[in-house]
Image 1: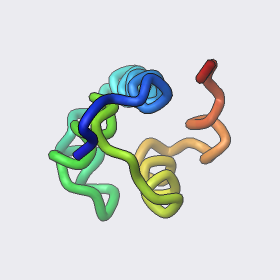
Image 2 (image 1 turned 45 degrees about the vertical axis):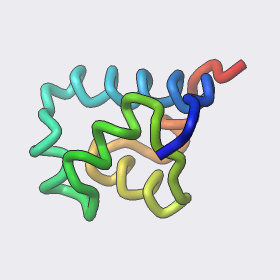
Image 3 (image 1 turned 30 degrees about the vertical axis):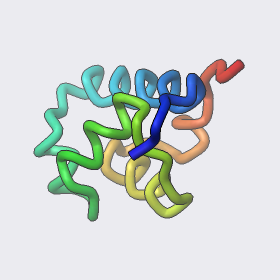
Length: 76
């Protein structure tokens, strides 16, 4: 876990959470469609987990979106 939360990760996490909730998915639903655990998903959405590119791809797969959709947020 990170010692402090990078605001970019927090903003990204909120974006992922909004997409997930907009699709009516729970953590368990997303975890079932990916190789990610519910706790990993929660940590990403909280902005407390920095992650690999492959995790981004798993999130996109599980959410049924193009990876570019996950990166379409204002991070500055």
